[in-house]
Amino acid sequence: MGTPVRILGIDPGLRHTGWGMILSDGPRLSWVAHGVISPDPTLPLAERLAVIFNGVNELVSLHQPHLAGVEETLVNAGAQSALKLGQARGAAMTALAVSSVEVSEFAPRRIKQAIVGTGKADKEQIAFMVQRLLPRAGGVKNDAADALATAICAAHYRPALVRGVA
Image 1: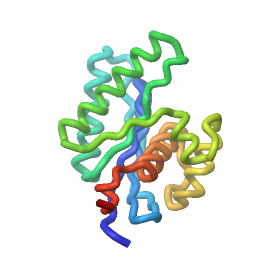
Image 2: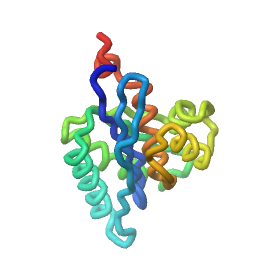
Image 3: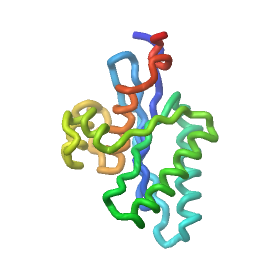
Image 4: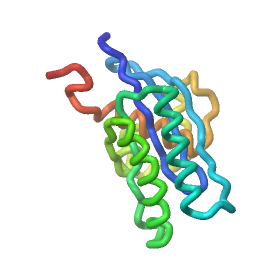
């Protein structure tokens, strides 16, 4: 088909940062791996952010993604929650940037539209569609399913140059 592109999806969170790695080869998508980075909630904030940063760094070293998709912060959750989520997101994005991985950011609504077809899909619908699109992934928990959905969204919207279209 062309040159396969490795895409890392990140669903940031202070308690659970989901991640999912896919391979995009033209229109075909295949699952590579997924999981969750879960810092100890009793750690101080700075140390939890370091766990997220180091976890994403390890993922980049292990999987060598060509690009990454990161879910944007949902501000409807409240100012304090949005601020903390933004810090987790910043730790993940910094780890990607330090490793020179191109990052695309997607609103939750856009990710849902790319996976389910509607921006108002719930977590169960996302997990169901991720399992349909990536059957080798098996049963996927919500945080990792959201991350795989973000990677799939990034595959759909990735820059034309990465797709080999000039």
